[in-house]
Figure 1 (cartoon, one colour):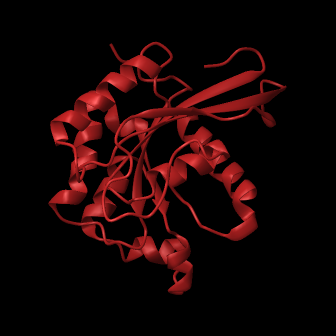
Figure 2 (cartoon, rainbow, N blue to C red; figure 1 turned 45 degrees about the vertical axis):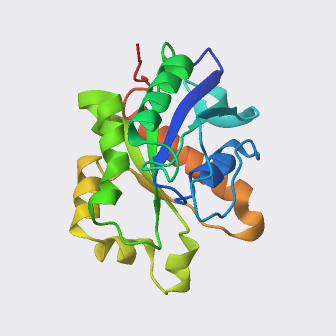
Length: 217
């Protein structure tokens, strides 16, 4: 993951169709690597790895300035409008082993729309996928990224008020993953500033695992 002054973090995105996975991945990378558009069906049909440019002087560790590079694995929506659940599961399993088999996955990001209530059987499918692929320690390697968070502001809610009124299902999930979450807003020219804050939060989550990744065979 690191040499003396460089850190590489490996992230994988999970979520339902049209949750904003690919768009969130592009913001994390600071690029347009992943195809993202509104559609009445699933857009992403296979796994794709994106790599960010180097973020120099991102943080200090052990008295040294650290350069950060982010690797993001985008995955098809689960469930998918065109692909079977078993196909998607095998596709993601193969991609995790290929890209992160030795280096390890540092964090699985469950992408949830903040403007869609979290409840019901279909909402649980991406979580089940994470559990099956990451194994018994999935709770230590999972965080939630809420997209469309600007809708919360538009409705006059703060983040804390939003979570206070959230469903019991979501609150239970947040408790199980030790309150690891971050909100993503679409705010014009503030993407770079927001990207840095989100990455700082993600690095803090990874630090909780002593910067160790989850490896795959």
